[in-house]
Length: 240
Image (spheres, rainbow, N blue to C red):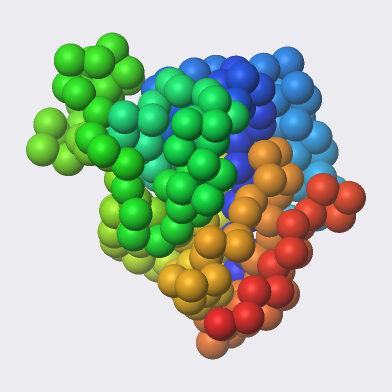
């Protein structure tokens, strides 16, 4: 049996400000750091060996993973950072306040942008300082791979090939993996793992800083899955 732990980074500065963040490289709030440490404590209580560690290129995920590992008192030989695990790009909505956008576009439209499967906002101008091509953290990513906007489907199309090539073989080999990423990159991953339909993925949400433990049986089927912090858990029983 192998185990996969998924953690959405702790609260970020723009989470707190209710801004569309996407690929903008913002850091954690004080609460976000506490959430990361709490995640570490919860994972530590499992008393399972962790063999591999993955996170995105974004500092809110990198720092969450660092705080988790520090809490567990693990110093891994290698942390695998992958831009494919980055948050979904929110296009021209990037940096804007979600509540203000609801007033302008209506709550239904903003919910579509945030939760739907294949609807993406208009592209963000490459002249914007928020565009990934203008952010130092992404200088090593091939320019033709950097998006200007994405739907959840677009995010899925970069997350899942990376998962199947780099992470799934580890699970198949009965190794335990910890991934720290983002709300939408983890939604995409869970859609694949749990077989959530395009219709029902709109109702699937992942809380910040609450580890989701997924246990696979010997046939690589999901055996058990649950949030470690039950008080902050979200409903995982999505019917297709």
